[in-house]
Length: 237
Image (cartoon, rainbow, N blue to C red; front, side, top):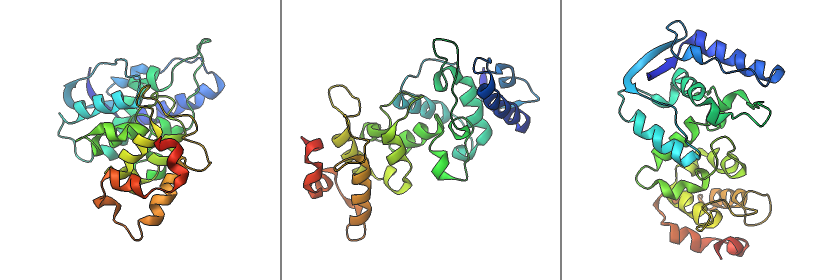
C-alpha cells in the first residue's frame, strides 16, 4: 500500500484500540483504518510493505530510506504519519505473547506527542528513526540506543535518548557505544543501564558537568574517553 497518515478520526480509533487492549488484550488491531479514506489519507506515492524489522537500528535504517524519498515537511512532527506507521507495524512494536495477548504500554509508544521531546523519543518508530537520521553519516556510533529489540528499548534508551543535547552529540554517542555495547555480541553490556558507578546514567551526568568548561561538540571520541574518571574503567576494558 502507499504511504499514508491517520486522520483525526483514525487517531481516535487507534487510541480507543490501545485502551481496549487493557480490557481485552487479545483484541485484533483495527487494520481497516490504515486504508479507509475516512480514517487515513495518502501522503506520498511510495509503496510500503510490512516486513520484519527486529531491532531499532534496522527500523531506523528502513524508515530513513523510505521517508527520504518523500517531500514531506516537518516529518518528525507528523503525528498522523507516525501513528499510521505504528499501526502498520503493530505486530513488531506490540507483538502478541504465546496466549495471543498484547501489552501496548503507554500511549506515547504508539501515538507520539511531537511537542514534548521528553515523551516523543519513546515512540517505538519515530524514536529510532530520529536517532538514525541524526547520525546518518555513521549510524553505528549510535548503536548504544539502536541495538535493542524494537518493542523493548530498555534502560539505555530511557537514560540516553531522553537527553536531546547528548543523543545528538557525535562524541558522546560514540563513547557510549564503545563503553556499553559488546562488540562481539552487539548487545548492551551487563550492568550498563544500572545506577551504579560507571553506568550510562553516570556518563550522561559527567558529560553535562564538563560541558560547562569543555565543548563536547568539538571533541573526538578518543578525547572524551580519555577524560573519563576511573569509575568507567570497567566498561572501557
